[in-house]
Length: 209
Image (cartoon, rainbow, N blue to C red; front, side, top):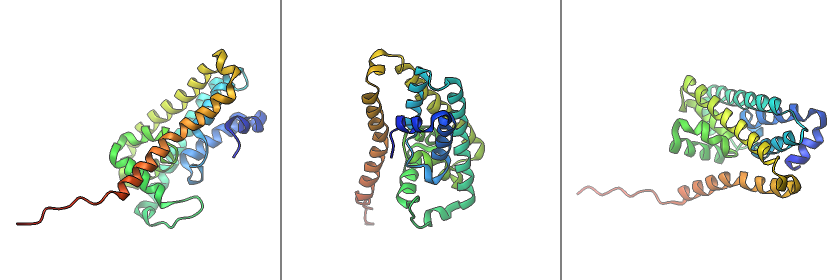
């Protein structure tokens, strides 16, 4: 898979459109869970700091794409319903991803729609589970808009701000490698937590005296 920098460079004059399409796919399509959303947003901010991308356009476009993607995910979950939990594994769908997102939902409730934005894989499946029955639609829309705004604006503006720091400008490759590594940490934590929960013995029930 190309680096975020290489991906945006390869898109040339279509970089903004490609960026928006990728953010939409990662947020709302099952095939998007492997896309580098966090690092791509950060890199877009760096590019905007250099003048290669229009900051206002990528902020607005990525925000709308993130919100629209989650809306599609919610409607998909509402359509497939509980049968999602019995769906067989395929190249782009794994039951373990659903289980991880479901466990995340059970821990964080409605806040999942905001928090999951920063956790790869979970952010793709969280809106789908919300549609299955975890959240009312009005509540979902509110959390979706808040989460989409905080994620897209926050990560892009962080990249834009750091892109104006001289050391970052001179060491952009090192910074991008660091961002990629940092962006996968939340997903690794969730995977390890889920494995530990599966490995833990069920709580024993006291015998009746």
